[in-house]
Length: 535
Image (cartoon, rainbow, N blue to C red; front, side, top):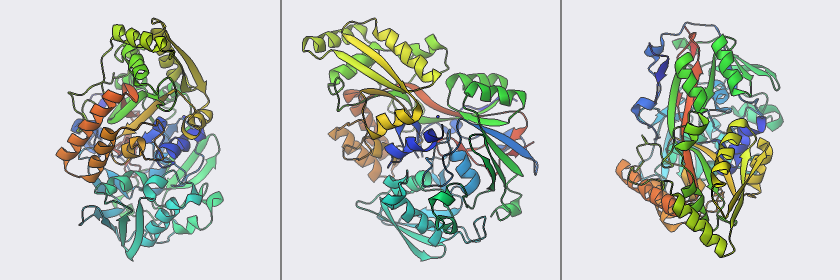
């Protein structure tokens, strides 16, 4: 069997990226979205192709950072950060199925609307209890959603939570009312941003308690936490699927190992079993030396311009920089495994319009624009803000070297520790251009929050009537053809206005050794922890 089963940053990095972009909810550096991006072959491998899992055993997973907290309010749902821990502790209420791209129930049974998205009926699975034995019911869901929407909570998911009102109909039924306009895609927002539910008994103890002593209904409970080193999770004796022999594992340990090459070597040597990565070179090596389940989404790595600051308040400056660069030359030069991007939307996305792509490199036109701007006293002189890590630095240095081939342009690299980077970019919005990374498995609800001109979480300052209309149309319909046309119009606006330049497509991969089985993705690359096991 092929090793490539399927093709398809610090504690602060784990939560603050999503704090700012997405309702204080999903910063472009580390965001996840919600139902389409990647073809049917880009989803999870079939469980049978990996072999059956035995009952019991211990598995060690690696993560790039420790957690700041383990509550659904302070943790961004990012697969490469804390979301695997969320899956272990809470289980998803609803999720985006990796193959069908549809909202699917897990702890929840159904989430439907009969009036075009004005109101939604959520049905919960009967017989579920939290790990402390308290009921997982409609009152628990409402308590969580009210907590998210409370400004005092400073939830990273407040953008979505403030867009709905939750009411208890009966113990297993929640009524959700869309605040303002009807939202036919509200289920996608719930499935990605409001899918992890904490026991009200834990919430009542306050944040100082529930951040470190979480209570969920997931397959595992937190047994021990050595700050900065590891978290040990043990089987939840009250798990709702225990009669099915789930979870498969007795114990899951998540260790903090910031160096991705060390992660790779640890799994290869058997010192650890599994880790998630979006590093192109690591994914490439995993196909040869380990096992890999890879998951494609929209987004990727990109240069985001600040349209509120010179020089990029002038579209000519944005066009000049992007025309000077060649996305395909980055992996050729750096051998970093990147898949060159031609659009924000992945080449296999159900929303991509292949006829609408970013402008190809045109050095002569780039130089003409640089000269034109300089003649007007607007020389393109800018700082490029990046998080302080070798991969980001290598690409920034590559871009800087290519721009040195032109006159009337200069680029300064501004590397900052991740917390300072986020504060400067997302809170102070004090940047000219910055590296941004996005994982979006559906345009809703993330892109609306990210680019709609009146969104308080529009960090680039982009305001375009065509884009606004497209984002509104994409939100207002569930018809795939209508949504595809709406996001085609969005792509046209992106190409015309150039608020960003995407240079690498987004991929996430679960990398594991031969002992591991049951690796299945959901949402934007997270994995189910209930079925993860050992052969």
